[in-house]
Image (cartoon, rainbow, N blue to C red; front, side, top):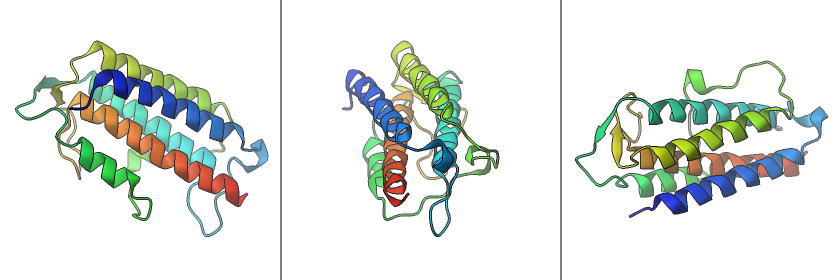
Length: 167
């Protein structure tokens, strides 16, 4: 079974790594989309913030004891987000807006990730979150949402790293 102490440590590691990558971007290139289109580094970071903030809302929302293993979906979430060859789609409320981003977005992400870590530490990770059903994974436990945040963040961290090398 996945462990909360390991997850919390990995979430903190991931946030630091993403911040290190973002810090390497020149301000003049933060809003520049990659050749061929797609999100800029600023857009990627806004998407990460919006996703993490939504997860935090779920972590404090309506939950109940799960009638299944609380980590049942972790491996599926991991394999989905680790497959960088697969194009994944995001929904409207999690899409970055058109306004230019600054490096201040890193602080917003760090604040949201810190809240994720705190909420996972404070609340029963084995409970099923009822406020939202993910289109691919279904209803997830707090533990699974924590791993979702981790693997989703790492996926976009790799994306930021690849984009940085193209600049």
